[in-house]
Structure formats: C-alpha cells, structure tokens
Image (cartoon, rainbow, N blue to C red; front, top):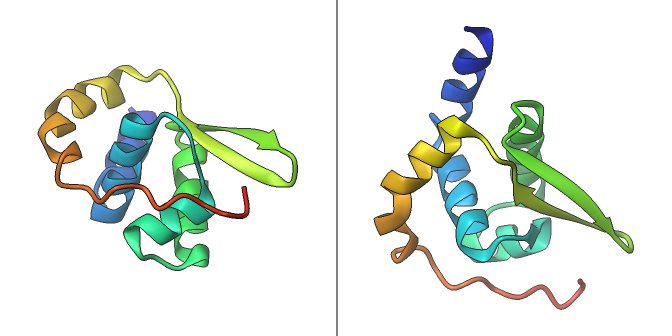
Length: 100
C-alpha cells in the first residue's frame, strides 16, 4: 500500500507528469534536455527526477559525465501513459542538449 501512495504523490505534480510524458515519447533524456524543453531550472528537475527514481518510475544510465534517464517498466505507470497518449502531442519538441 505504501508504494502506491508514493507513486500517487509523485504523479500529483504536473511537471513530473510532463517529464514522464517526454520520457515516454523520447525514450531517453538527459537533465539539460528536460530543463531546456520544459523551461524548468536544473535544481527543480533534479529534485523531480530524484523522487521519481526513489519511486522506481525512472532509471538512470551513465553516459560519459552525463546521466541519462528513462522510464522503468511499471504497471501503474503503463496505465497512466495510455491515458497521457493524447497529451504527448501538446508537449514542446525536445530541445537537444549541445553538451551531451
């Protein structure tokens, strides 16, 4: 039950939902791509990603000095992503990171 509560709290923020939708659409993103695309500060995005990692909704992979984020396989998240499919089109095009 605690895991479900944690996931519900994570999904209760519109910016985290946008990050999840972007990851679903793009498959992998670095922090700077998320920041530039959604026009959010790096500390804010990092906090969101930390919560999502703790809730086991995202996973990381080291690529040089950059951390790449992608979604994990999660039944609850998969149900949500089906409902978010229409929202993917309203998200801005990803601003490619020149540093990655």
